[in-house]
Length: 338
Image 1: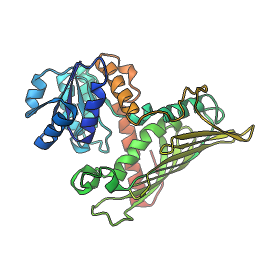
Image 2: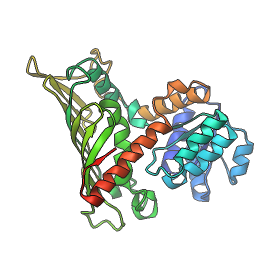
Image 3: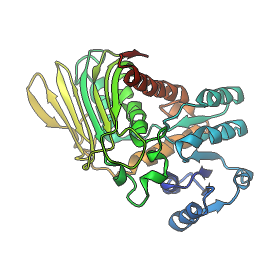
Image 4: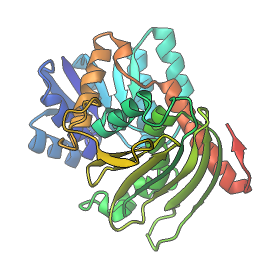
């Protein structure tokens, strides 16, 4: 398969590396309007790049990966859908034009999927299996949770000025983006939020007009309820989840590569992994594995198997509506129902 990557920033170059490691990929080429990005991709990944996008389309790729900043996603998604070239789009924070993308896909019987990277994370998959196997009781029982994701914004891309790319811009800011990014996999575990009470603010001296913290109280369609904090303040990174019920507790620390379960009957903790029934390897994985698995699943889609990918643009629209509801709650000081 011949894959075209549109956008050769950090994610575009990462996707190139992921794709080059997959046996069914015969060639990867890329396009970016910036010459320095094209040169970096050629030097770092050894791929051919195009100066003009029309040249890239004339190359007749079998599939397209769109790794541009979020405010350009729908532009290239519409082009790919119109050309009936299967495409993948990185995680988004804007829903402008997504309905049009879905319409073009349906009208043209074309294939396109949005990113859901964390659903391919082995920890998240293990937690999903634990819940389905009844670790927290009947899967329909109510679950309480607390979740914190945080990392200081200048540490995201240490070699790039946060003020000069999308994470430092109001509409596509890092904390705003991560509200959606985390909701994509959290909703897989405990259902989509059906009501939210939220606050957002700027607590740092970061030189950008952005909110750097979101605090969200949610009730989910499954009956789960809890609190989420997303920030770009924490000088030490965090991704920490605690799920609890009368039957037990699941506790996950991504940075520590630790997944534990407390059994309410035996009143004892156990570390998940080492060949137990979850199939989880106990954190013995590299950070790139989930990206590679996501690209592999996308290639299945590109070959005609849409069911191979666990997320859709319709799902993405629902997650993005949650972000809008959270911000409406902050604006009005009221609980918002979705």
